[in-house]
Length: 491
Image: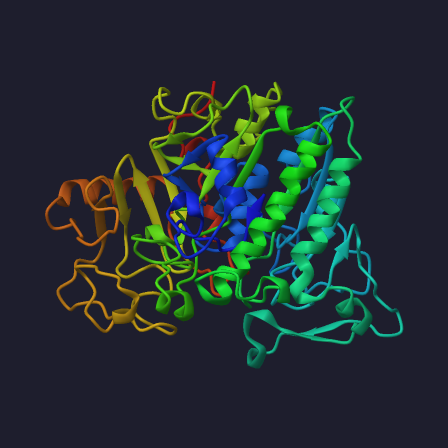
């Protein structure tokens, strides 16, 4: 289960006090809670890509803004599991494209290739974020409920920004009420689980829309939390999570199902919950879009009775790019050559969270304007600022009001004239990234900068949040899988 923009401190089991999340908290009490888990990116589609194929987005063969992210013949998590006899289903937010080529999608025709072509038996959900046109559901290869007499067109002119404007498709839009999306896909998830049997295994990828903007909880959840509509939306998300967990229990699958609950990136710092005393990412610096910790450190909970010890905490580094390899080992499936090129199995960390040595020492992160590299407790960025929208302050909450503190940034959210050209932090001593150590540790900064060059992490453009406009690295300099930001090649 993947939430959309759920922050590191948005759940009770991660420290939230203004928002009640009893079902997520129960999941953590029955399994392991990771406190140093990360998405590969501070925006959603690169992270979702890594979850489903065990690869960093900068290794993707992207054909165009709206084309399917996965290339022909690519081994994905669902295709691997399907080949091993699993029933596979994807529900909720997709945001990984449809079709081939560089042109915008024609939503009135067959949407192919898409989720089914990468290994899912069935798909039902939103094509992208729930504020991004077209505002419809897609079922398998077609827009759900589309009236051929009322075709859909998407206006992507600059005046409508990254989300675009949907024109036409009234019946299809009516079939996707914005405040009921997660209820509808949860109903589908419950039905899927009810239809399974002990004779064959199953894999469900359930991607919720909450708490991504627009913050739009259903009427029955408004006023439930102490963190405004944002908190209400998360409490609604927790309710939907509970319904899925209840379905597993009701149909006898809870004891032999590995459940993962996580987010695609860090939370957005919104004014209303902040005014009410709730910080989505807690003490972390930054938020969604940033390469700083707040952009990609995320909640990550795993439950697998009889395998994962209950009520435990994993403190070592974990990356979502490792999910595919971990699942494969859990399912006793050998990874074919070329599969999950950047991921490693961390199943040992699930099974013995307190005793298993660190499985991953190095990983990389992508903001919308910079990369970052992690080596052990050390965090390095080759550029100034947040690598996103937090600093230099561009829009949204003024820097001073955010409560952020960073030695390179003044009280107006601007980079100080004497700030170093790059950034280095020791997260063991400074999880809030308040003090840039580049000038104190020039050799370490230089070594990590050189390592980024070795990995081919040369930022070009991620011009629109949620849509990769160009490759993150020049294809000629694209790193090979052996040069990926992984501890070591797998045997």
